Amino acid sequence: MRQNYFISTQGASVKKKDNQIVIYNGKEKIGEIPINLIDNLFIFGNVHISINAINFLLAYDVDIFLSTLGGKLRGLITKFYLKSDYKMRLKQYSAFNNSQKKAKITKFIVFNKLEQIEKHTGLDLTNLKEKLLNVSTYKEVLGIEGLASALFFDFFKKSLKNKYGFEGRKYNPSLDPVNAVLSLVYTLYHNVLFSLVTSRGYDPYIGFLHRKRGSHSAFVSDLIEYSRPALSMYVLELFNSGYFRKSDFKKKKGYMITSEKSKDFFKKVNEEILKNPKYINNSQLFLSQIESML
Image (tube, rainbow, N blue to C red; front, side, top):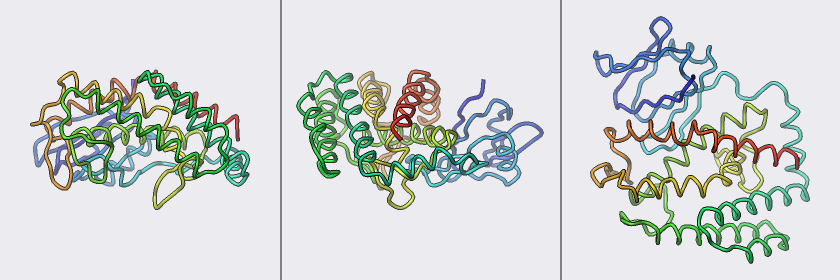
């Protein structure tokens, strides 16, 4: 079975050898992966990859995600930018330019996020859901989504056994270990959804709730909103279970997981989130529901 693989050893080199991808730290070989076992390759920070390795990976339809050590996506190397069948993109663009469809899809995304918050926290957001159905402007929808997110993270904060300095959702940079892990988990799942969106023939940059800014893949951010409460609660459990210790983090501009801990963390998230059918199937279903509204 093909898997996601993560390389975060700083200064490592990634090369092709026979039918394998081989990772070196200096002259020491620290890993080798048969090409037929790789689904996606995630590279973090100062890791070098040869042109031969890139071409080899692309020949086997492996996407290469390039991120900072903190998990911020810098770029994606992929065989095809978008599928050649442009029918879904045309429907997406048409819906984006249709004010009624655009408003309907935007509300749908937020409504489902509210329901997921209720499911994972027990909070009653009935009033917000009713209000959402009756508002008419994009600004009002954003206001409701923002209030729901604030209520969610208030619950999240109260549920943390050890706060680790967490006072609320803050990022760029992450000012505490909890925010650092939240950002990293969101980013890893966002990367997987990027592949899902493009494989289905959509433009990842044309969103409805989220609006493109810079290189922001807005439609992928729309899609992740459904899963964000579940992903956040997963992070909550990691901290409450004692999986993390203060020594597992280092601080530069913001906090990040140490390279020693990240190896086990990436393996854990890959098995429990990125390759978990529960998460991917829910995201695929949510995308299909949005698709039916285009």
